[in-house]
Length: 514
Ligand SMILES: CC(=O)N[C@H]1[C@@H](OP(=O)(O)OP(=O)(O)OC[C@H]2O[C@@H](n3ccc(=O)[nH]c3=O)[C@H](O)[C@@H]2O)O[C@H](CO)[C@@H](O)[C@@H]1O[C@H](C)C(=O)N[C@@H](C)C(=O)N[C@H](CCC(=O)O)C(=O)O
Ligand SMILES: Nc1ncnc2c1ncn2[C@@H]1O[C@H](COP(=O)(O)OP(=O)(O)OP(=O)(O)O)[C@@H](O)[C@H]1O
Image (cartoon, rainbow, N blue to C red; front, top):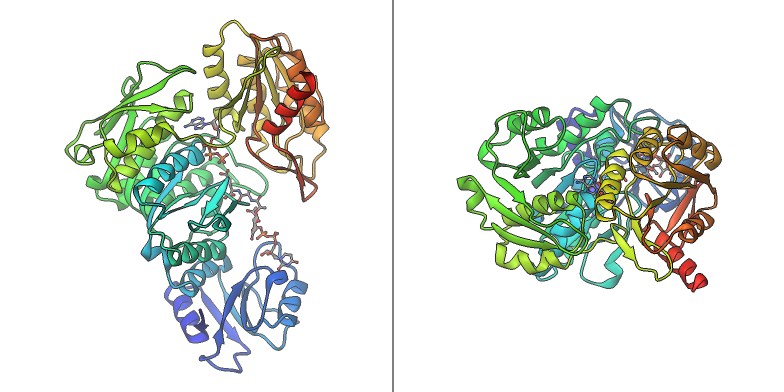
């Protein structure tokens, strides 16, 4: 793979990003044979992107490794041997050049993209698990947990970001296409739009699951309006839009979809009993007779001509409890329907899907049942705890939870509220404290808990906190290990410190108590 300077500048000009080109001594036919944004990975004849919290020394190092061209928003005078392309927005330039360098792999993929504050990973897993079978292993997955870029075991690995940096995104799409994949299910975070990781990318199907305040603050979105604006970009860039009509801000979301998408290609869904503020043409409703820990079923029903043509009506069984998973499953079923999968194919496959770290239960003889779940903001914690309360009306809810440092500050208040409304005992602990002191974060969550309603204990060490919660529980109680899901690390002062996962720790503790 290679690009000439002339090709790069043409793309940048077309998108009104090019400001200046300096030191182009080798001329427009000079070729770059690699694209990088991290000097530690730079190599001979690379094009290097200077972005983010960047230091000029990184560029000097990239030059020493053989990089010949850089793209940046400013001129660097410490790299005399390099050709500099100065642009008005480096992250947009990186996405556009990345797509070109990797030969526009997105054109060979049917892409289904999910956005939403909650449920992206679960819905993506539902859709991927169905499509994996129906496409005979030719469906890739870019999720928060795993990235699957081909059928070989080494092509399945843990993700570092929900939506990868643009160069990694197009690299992985290229690998997926070269490995025979023709379909991709991906999660698109609002950060991906804020940081232009998916700039210029179009999806065949884009899904808007829901929105509630989250990811607002330092290093994330400046305001809720910006958060919503970023999420709306997914619909603007989708050929077919699937929207949860029950979501907050539905009116703005539906309007954004209609501005760019033919209404014949917009599918709206809701729970059959849900009352909407606005009368809109609902395409699918889902209804459940039973929603408990033993059986979770939905009956999916089409209401419009275009919905009927998908042939996905029918009764489905879900293996993951929680009312919200019925909504997630409905969204996923519509997307696979658009991809050509019918009820007969989807029915059995959906029933088998489980998502690591979401509603995973561990039974214990002498203590309460333990749930590991990724609920890590107010909306998800509230949904999780109210569901478990309805299922275990007699037992106590004992919740182990912490909140990350350096981001998502509003979660601390949200946890305080959800714990006050539903929990009996809260063990506040560390969860990715980053550069903050976990004890301070714990104090902050605690300040939002009503101590008349909830007994609070503060145990900074997460292992000890889990042990304490299990020890406190009686067989009829429920222990909830929240917010970390399958995370195999704790982010501490910029280092991903290995963490055996909540599930492994809980099992280890139970073994020790046996
Ligand atoms: C705030 C944010 O999004 N930051 C992301 C961004 O950081 P950045 O561009 O400032 O990079 P940096 O690490 O400060 O370094 C600056 C540049 O110098 C380069 N560098 C650095 C060191 C060196 O020796 N040489 C060198 O060249 C780096 O490669 C980088 O290009 O680009 C980095 C990759 O290029 C990301 O790892 C980093 O994500 C951070 C870690 C992060 O946690 N992001 C979260 C908020 C995020 O994006 N989350 C969403 C999910 C949210 C949701 O749940 O909805 C996601 O999509 O994952
Ligand atoms: N539709 C939903 N509404 C409310 N809560 C949900 C919904 N779906 C899942 N949850 C809760 O949110 C948690 C995270 O779910 P999931 O990983 O699917 O969401 P996500 O959007 O990928 O999250 P994140 O962006 O934080 O990675 C689950 O463990 C569950 O507690």
